[in-house]
Image 1 (cartoon, rainbow, N blue to C red):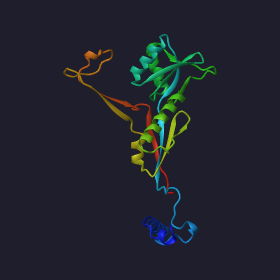
Image 2: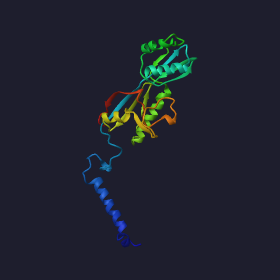
Image 3: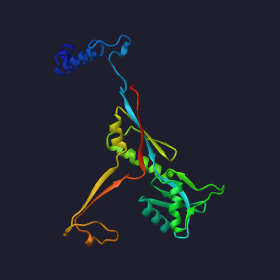
Image 4: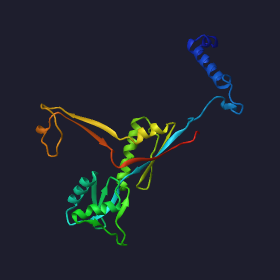
Length: 236
């Protein structure tokens, strides 16, 4: 193809037009900053304007308990008394209970007296009681927050943990109200079980045939996580 033929090709002409338009936009209009140099109006990266940070406190207590009843009985008793999820495991020959709700040592001691139980002692004589949750629960909560952020298109945000009590989340370009709604609000899903009947409530140990027209809302995270404090990120 001759030089004259190239210049008459519609595709080449279109490319030249777009190239000229790009050069004008970069170096001519709008006028670039005086110190822009060869970069002209080009901008690299993101301009982050404002934002928020959240400090989420994981409410709970990790307690060694001694009681004259079985571990299952202790866990069930605490779940009923505190209206909270309770799991247990063995550590240093002591049964340790993770109570996924805030409870003071004094209140817990008073509750345990009803079953003849007490807070266990460590080898150094101190009470086996710590506020917060276990490392596994903290990491699982962090993972759930990451999944929620990812589903909202915020996969680049990485929550950070501080000990076993706090999770920090930075949300650039998001106001405080929206940030609290995104991170602090529990997720919810609904299960609808439709059968032939008149309706009623789900009761433990019901058979499938006894469940009639039930709508159950199952919410994860309603206990054990609190948006304790929020702050504004300065404009960058």
